[in-house]
Amino acid sequence: MGAGAKHQLVFVDRLLATLVHLRHATTHDVLACWFGVDRSTITRAIGEVRPLLAERGCTISPGVRLRALAEVVDDLGARGKTGIIDGTEIRVRRPDAGRTDRDKFISGKNKQNAVKTMVVTGGDGRVLFCSPTQHGSCADITHARQLGLVKLLADGPAVEILADAGYQGLGAQTGGRVITPPRRTFKKNAPDWYEDMHERQRKAHSSRRIRVEHGIAHLKNWRALTRHLGRREHIRTPSKPLPPCCPTSRPPTWPGTNNVKRQVPPRHMTPPPPTVHELVS
Image (cartoon, rainbow, N blue to C red):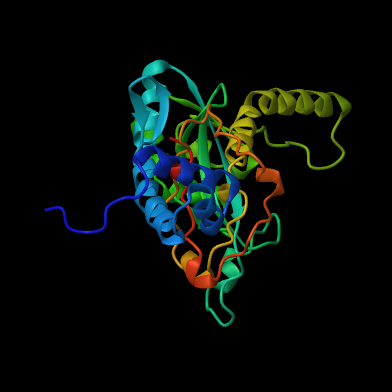
């Protein structure tokens, strides 16, 4: 009882240091200078607080939190709401040379090394779920199937899920509960009336689905979800994502933050990559 070093920072300060680190990618050395403690104290604080944030899930109303994809599907079905899914990528450092699965991290969309996560939002753009990450080369529809979305929708409550063309094929597997953009019937020499009809249908679907892009853009305000600069060894296994702490709140502005030169910590000081759920509770 009582063994071990005592905390030099109260819990509020440890939470604040963790949020600033995740929001602005501020190094542990700079945070240590701000709080007047040693770098190891900041490292310990962030390491203890991040798992707590990851377990909180996404808040949809006072006292109601969603922590799993099954809970999201059940909640949407119970409230009769529409969900929107889309994939987003987080840039990572290039894996070690000679690694057998090195090419798996190269995104087919951006041609860069990345990991991919699936984001689920409500019709208003509020983030409800962020999936564990997969390699950047994994297709959106494959990732959704691996997460068990097909089984949850096919066996669960009646829910309408909007998705982009990357998820075409899930509609037939889920009884029409996943709605994707309409396919083209005429590949060549389409009549004018068909082009006008197809364009109207495509724009109508896009205008409903655009809210998920707003939710993803909100997540990208956290620097940790824009590009991870950690060690290459930390991306050997796709990390479990974390939910943002209060998607509607903003961390405090530190005096002189814009004038602080970002430092690149040595490799042994670089923290492991955050999960999306750490940032979205």
